[in-house]
Amino acid sequence: MTAMLLDDADRYLPLTESTYYIMLALVDPLHGYAVMKKVEDISRGIVKIGPGTLYGAFTLLEKEELIVKVKEEDRRKSYVLTPKGKSVLTNQIKRLEIMTQNGLSITDTL
Image (tube, rainbow, N blue to C red):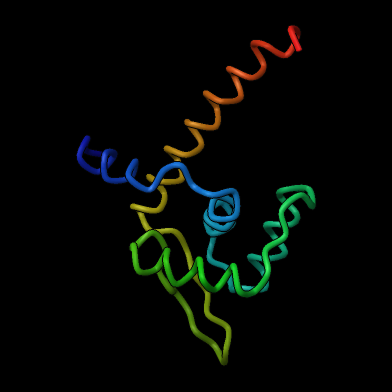
């Protein structure tokens, strides 16, 4: 991966919590309802995505070429992360790791 690609990926950061979880769910191809359920499951019920939020995010992520439609059957459209989307998600995870390490380093003082 080139430095230019990484710099391009960083321009999307930080991701909102909803966008982060949507992208995390789309590591494997999923349709909208499955994404909503997976987000709720992997966030342990903390994040719940409604249809308006989800389809708005799909539109933006597809426009920015972070996800791509891989299947359309009846009204179900399945999406998956693109290589660019994977770079963005990877960089967001690295940011979250740094934030977590910083928070854990001071929890004893709180």
